[in-house]
Length: 288
Image 1 (cartoon, rainbow, N blue to C red):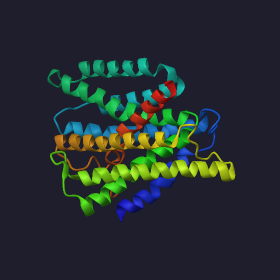
Image 2: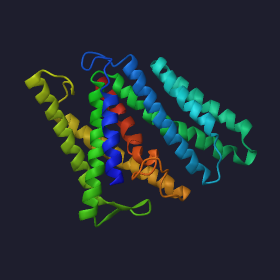
Image 3: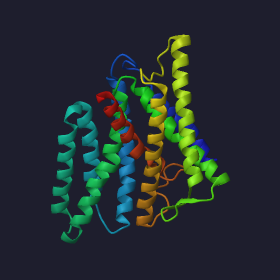
Image 4: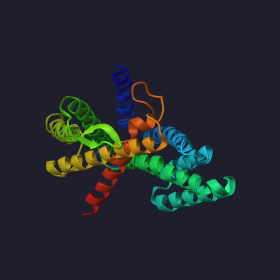
């Protein structure tokens, strides 16, 4: 019940942030204060997830500098919002800055562990979630973010119930004993179903009411189904990756902030790989 109630509260808030007015939905990029608020909230989520990851790292004996890492994440989001074309040099510079900081602030026996955990945290929780504002910034950006969220959520729900009812063959018992191949297959099918529903709904809104609240451009319908399957696989990999990190640190949940869900990192682990995969896929699609 806690899990359901938390989802009931959070999902409308997330969708409200995605569809904040302040830019063109189909004729141009999202810009202005709405994009700024979305970026700010995403940065906050990234910082919460980073704090939980750094807590996990401390369970292994490392002591990465929390404040320095959080400052680097905030700087990454702020710089990308202001100068999106300079993402690569700014991100690389922040990684080097964390290396230098750990070199002179950590005991010599911990420099390697502290520096690697700090840089990885910047990439794992900062860069990955930075792709959400980048997706929303595109033409029909809110529709892309909704596609991402619904595909991930549907896959998660399908895997949960199908795994409990039909699960017999373990997917990765050393990492996550509860996950099964049956659940993984159901997850993909759930994502395909919701992706097809979103594309059909977008066509219906456009043809019947001339509304572009949802818009998926000129790409053929099967493109979105293939993309949904790819995003789903990335989401499942992200879930397993976070489970492996927790097991490596010897903990069950990354935190207790979200009732019924564990920590922020537990809730967004699938997005940490799914969002960059969708972002890269859109870049490749636009280029070719």
